[in-house]
Image 1: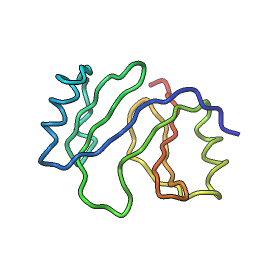
Image 2: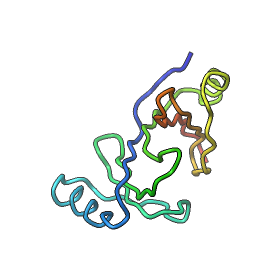
Image 3: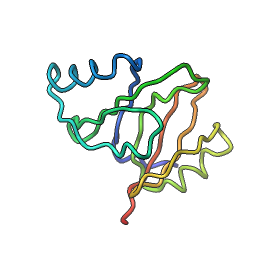
Image 4: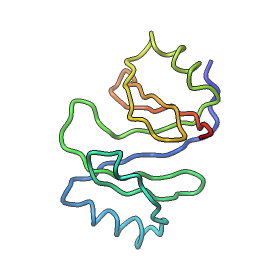
Length: 121
């Protein structure tokens, strides 16, 4: 059983040449607050925004066999969630982000979903 707590963030992708246009749209048109993104952790550029008690992440994407688009859910016990899912779905490794334990998986339709648990540093 997985105990879901809340959605953490949603990640969307834009074409590299439209990233700055996306930043302007989400800050000036939509009115989201631009927040710090640990850019040194990522190979591609992007922006993060506050959106209520969650975040919107925007990145660039070139055609890949697995999309970087995903929804992330905070769970009560990420290790239990991993144990529950590891024989049911394809598990994807994720880069380490300080303060979070996480993994992702593909649903049967190719959608990427991330599960995470916040941890004290």
